[in-house]
Image 1 (cartoon, rainbow, N blue to C red):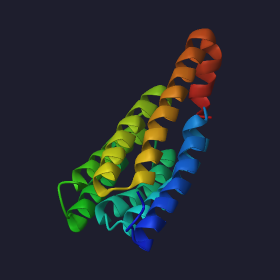
Image 2 (image 1 turned 180 degrees about the vertical axis):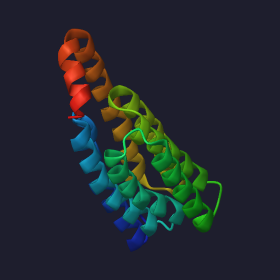
Image 3 (image 1 turned 135 degrees about the vertical axis):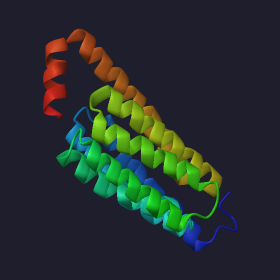
Image 4 (image 1 turned 90 degrees about the vertical axis):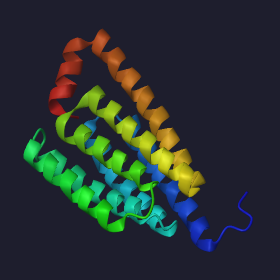
Length: 184
């Protein structure tokens, strides 16, 4: 499977597996703040992976995710900041556009931005799951085995956490509301 793969491609696969570890740890957490911090680390690794595969739109949009996470934590619910972040993402995509494959990275950026700025708890995780599916499609097309596996695991881990949160909401509504209010 890895025969004939360049050292750059192999490095991309290894870096994507590092991102996988950060993603699983983040989405397994019931605490939104911990999820955000681990997503920053994962996106550094994903940006490096995309750069190694020559997927420049995905690489730049992955780096912009880091700024988006920081801004979303400070400006939760701010339409103005969210729209500014979306505009920066679209400009970056326009400047690095190479092929229709880049639509997947753009879709992921849009889902992730809306989810992080406007939603919390289960709705946020559903939107981030949609973003992960778009990233997974991008990884499939560029040939990143590690990236595809990472995003697939993000989808599965995120689905399990959504199930756990929904169960907590049914069993312990007061505790769930406190968890939702604190974002922890």
